[in-house]
Length: 346
Ligand code: FES
Image (cartoon, rainbow, N blue to C red; front, side, top):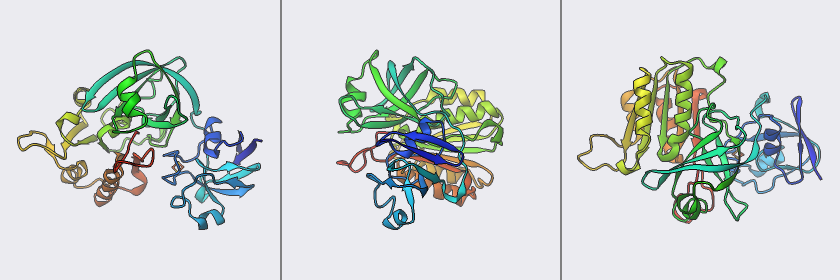
């Protein structure tokens, strides 16, 4: 039996077994969200009235004490009764692009770097999203989903671009996306999801920005940087792309185009395992930022990639006096219990 979820002056119908976050986003009602897997804690909310089933909420994301105090993870909790929830700190909700399911046809596949593919998905109906958000793909023959950031700007709403890196043994990439997928295949997906995007144009002050991406963490940064520059063509935007070695680099042509179009745009490719004779920068992208930028006071910062890189980036930004509210992050989180040290299929 379904239930109703109310938040502020908005409400959504929640089908039996449907998580609160899913129901609200499908009704176009925003609440904070990031991983949609129960691991980040971004979607924590207060249950004001009613009862919820915490489902598979991990204990390290939602502690027993938090459950007793009425907190729940929106992406995991299912209402057992009609329920009223509130955002922590009394934050207000707002409208957002509606989450929806859709089928997409594979329109292009290009191997752009070692174990890295650019996949284009054509849609019948445009998808409304903000640059930087992600979609979930349903792995054929399973009920499993994998998350991939969009490299698009919002206007590119009928052909979605995903950057996919092969994960050895990964359920989605190993046999499917990086091997069997063919142009013309139909992919089942849903989106948009996530809060990793710029504020609305009217609230975007045009502050300087630094973006740091690890591997395919570059994808959402391309959409965010292009959107930011289209809004404020003179804005200072510095992008660092960190990879292991030159074989992992891609998107250089697009980055060169941005450099020649926008005087305030600059980018650096940084290799962590470089041969002695490379002309590129070496080390970690977060250290390159520290070397280049003496003060990031008043800047915004954007980080996407493996958790250690994101955490190093947050520290680096704070060392350069960036305000915490201007630090935005998207961590690649493990998609399944890891058999290798880190499985990332985002
Ligand atoms: S724990 Fe729910 S969005 Fe991450």
